[in-house]
Length: 106
Picture (cartoon, rainbow, N blue to C red):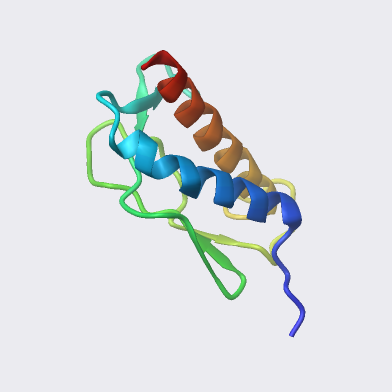
């Protein structure tokens, strides 16, 4: 069976999953102002997972959480889709950037 996960997605997920224990042990929450004037928090319940053609980002139930999709479809190559590969790459890069900013400021 041919693996359909793009290499960029695999690398970003591995980086984020490696940063997650450090972020969980930090004193603050990872936050971003992307998409609004108030801070949105990025608090993941568990590591990002890939099952078949779907990528799952599970967040905690907290107020002002950044609105990620629960499931992204790797077969969806539409540029304007909210749960396709382009949206997934954008969200993964945002998570990585926010986590690194949190760790650099601690």
